[in-house]
Picture 1: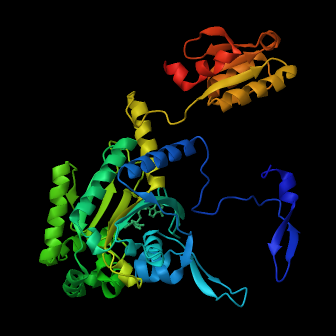
Picture 2: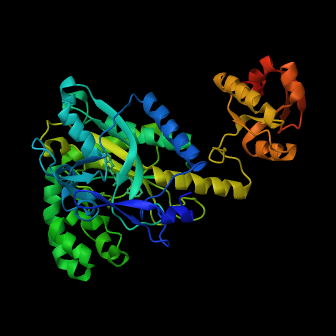
Length: 478
Ligand code: HAM
């Protein structure tokens, strides 16, 4: 309907000063989702739901509870939390001035959340969760917004499945056990989802004191080479040298590889903490690679930082092109204090759900091409239990009543239309359901239905009272 010529000629509202003006839409224009955003439609949404359900199941087994924070926050929260010099805050935020409407309201600068760690820590402080003395184990699933150049695996509205574990030091929030447990949980989640070929890379970016020491050394080293670097890196060398290490600029890679490594400037505590994380991962059998350049693009990180990637290339099947980071995370031991809260060390991660979907789809495609039926190739679109085909319009009401009864008994049902010819009913049923339930004059009169099972070709007449058991998934498996 929206693409129809009538709609193009319809009236639509234009915000004006003090009132709405109406004018006709130019016939050539068509409404589309905004660049970098997209609609998620069935059947793909079934895969999204399966991912989210699996994540919820895994998180529940590890003792996490769900937190839902607002989609927008004050701009200041992200400037202070994520860091003013980061790409996210300096270039990518959707920010607007929210004008005061009433005397009780203040005008303020608001921003669509580009990530959710800052919002969760804000909520932790606001609700005084630290006063419980308990470790807070929280997860969230929701959209985030960054004005990035859209490409495969990179969108302006994207979804994250994230986790934050934080609490007062007395709750054990600083323990390397927390880091290793979270990484082990991620390995379990990816395995349960059927994601293959993931690689865990991790590093320690040290405490804020270690970072200060390293910053001096890095600035000195960069001063000698920055003239040979791209303009972005020249700027970062001055404003936030650590960000140079994240740079993907191909021409600068050789110079960056030769810069001093943060691992050589870690204090004894940070070094011991990192070694304990690695030892716990070894004990759990979680494979990893230490990547000394992994500093991540947000300023709040301290000590452990990590990413799970899927190598690009046909063999691994990431489906992500150059955006190969499936998820990222790390410790943020000073973030709560940076936001004016109590000491609350923490560690978390966020999975890019869009990228997880692309990866699972690519790996499933590979399985199909190879003729294999692995976990990832398990079909995620479930067929309905039954399609009810009324024979003649007079049977429509009876069909709907039967559908109501079966649905209430837990059977998934689609209802056809009595005007359809038998062949059309069979074709429609075969596309969406495992059984067709034919409801003709005779069946309605005798309280029965004729059921054909597509997988076996078997056709039987069944008493209405036995239909539910026969059609349901459980009945099919028995
Ligand atoms: P991040 O590395 O900025 O970290 O994002 C985490 C993940 O979100 C990325 O690895 C990627 O999969 C996905 N992602 C980021 N930007 C986009 C985009 N434009 N389109 C699609 N996917 C994207 C954070 O956001 C931190 N808050 C993670 C964290 C939680 N650290 C501690 N706790």
